[in-house]
Length: 154
Image 1 (tube, rainbow, N blue to C red):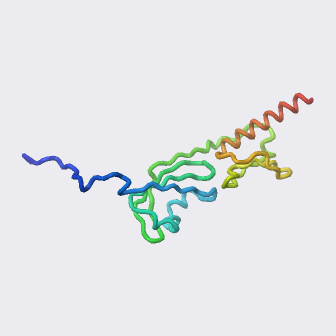
Image 2: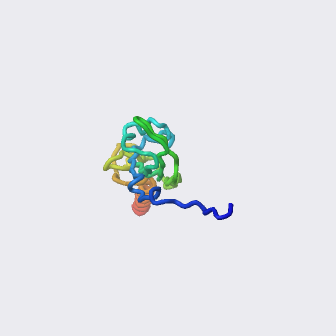
């Protein structure tokens, strides 16, 4: 069309994000899996704090992933979300250190985080490790030092 201008956004439809949407942090317990997040009732206890276009940053206690969700719709006792970003952070690589099967790494949550336990007597060797991969690295180092000391003693 001759003389028609391209569309433009007007001031009444443009504002700072803080006035329209909010960012929330969801600290997730170890038993919460990805599939739980997409059930609208999962958000029932916090749905009153949510609005359409809000962003939820996912912070699992075990550090196994990082995610951002967009609230697409919500109401009393429910919310629907869409994944904006998802990264699996747990490498999934198993340790090759000898004797690894005699120990266990468990996420106890809270201030204890990941703990390294000797299976034979349930002694906690280390606790407070944020990520499973870091706990595995600590255990590998422990086992390598233990093996070195045993070799020196022989």
